[in-house]
Length: 267
Ligand SMILES: Cc1cc2nc3c(=O)[nH]c(=O)nc-3n(C[C@H](O)[C@H](O)[C@H](O)COP(=O)(O)O)c2cc1C
View 1 (spheres, rainbow, N blue to C red):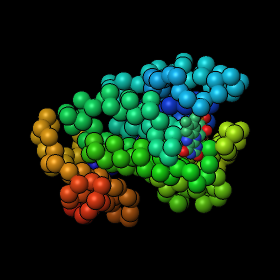
View 2: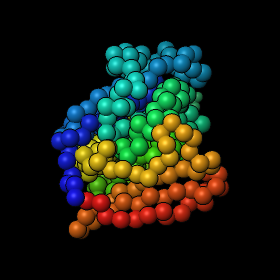
View 3: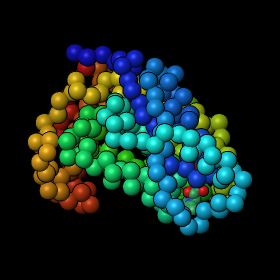
View 4: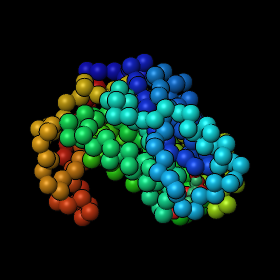
């Protein structure tokens, strides 16, 4: 029997950002995690310049980059340290950005070790449009967590801002919609959803119950997982305990043949 222990939570928020809106969400998530009792690291990824179609003459770009570059660069050690990992990037063609993707590739040795199994993952993004990849980018950001055998944290509809929002923010993670000229700032609902994602009801609360206390039936750490298989874990609180479901794909992941593997109370 384990209980929720947010004081034991360590949360690493990793962001990529050009004009500052994804960075603004990252700051809200970090604040939410800190308020929820977690020790927090806020990091950036390495830039891969030149990036086409970015207006590097814009004042908001220059200011955002000045602040962004002051953040420490995320490393594999940050991911080892954190029980909760929250990463995000601006959308690029409906998917995560190249610099964040490059970081995820860089920490691939952690996957071989199984070092992130049982940890908590959550995602955030910023998009120009409301219907041009906002939720798809969040989903693309969540998929690597599933490959690592991590538990996904989202935003429940008990968060009032999620019901009120007319712009970004979704059950799949925190998000902002900046408009195609990038001039819309992150609004109050989007900020509140981001804080909730990082906070005691989101990544921090989940991270307080994750990690080595849970042992999953998993392939040998340095071996290859069974070809074409993937797992993802969902946690949801309910009266009398928290339920955990492990959903495994059967066959190639892109066929989406998911099956409910197990479902039991663990604490
Ligand atoms: C190369 C490129 C591709 C983009 N693709 C999309 C897209 O597919 N959908 C969208 O809504 N916005 C797209 N955008 C807009 C950015 O994702 C958007 O401005 C975002 O809010 C910027 O976040 P930031 O302020 O953190 O840099 C694209 C921007 C660039 C430069």
